[in-house]
Image (cartoon, rainbow, N blue to C red; front, side):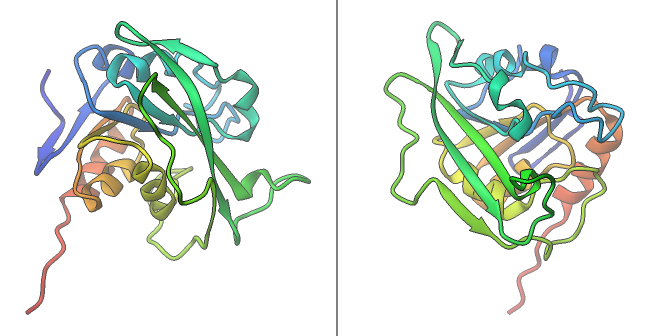
Length: 208
């Protein structure tokens, strides 16, 4: 399987994650699948099979299903020889986010953490964290997640490598790169592969 992009520990694959995930392994998975709210042509339905995709690749994963899809999330999913069970929920509170509805759906990003027995995702830095958003450059994607939010979620997942099977514009990969981790992204839309590759190829110059 030839990568679309491969540079300095960051790899991107252009394809359907249901097929690509059978050949890709990582220490953890962090992903933001479609919510099924018709925000774009690819957002017609929440893919409940995304739990199986994540479990194929790693023994621990985090999924951002959107508030709307929390009732559809599984309690456990069969991984490679072991059950991967729901462990905890992290919530990013966007203090200046756009409110959508009476309980502020647009102000909260839940991330459900799953792991095999014996793998801990518990840390002493709280479960709900406030974030001020809107300061970073806007990506060419209808629903990008704030980079500082992704970094916080990723910091709760163990391991040296992370995969995002619904890569989009590459926020998870950029967060992993900033944290010194190897990263793998899978994306079915080639235009987003191109956007992510350009974004990740930008190097920060050190001035002396």
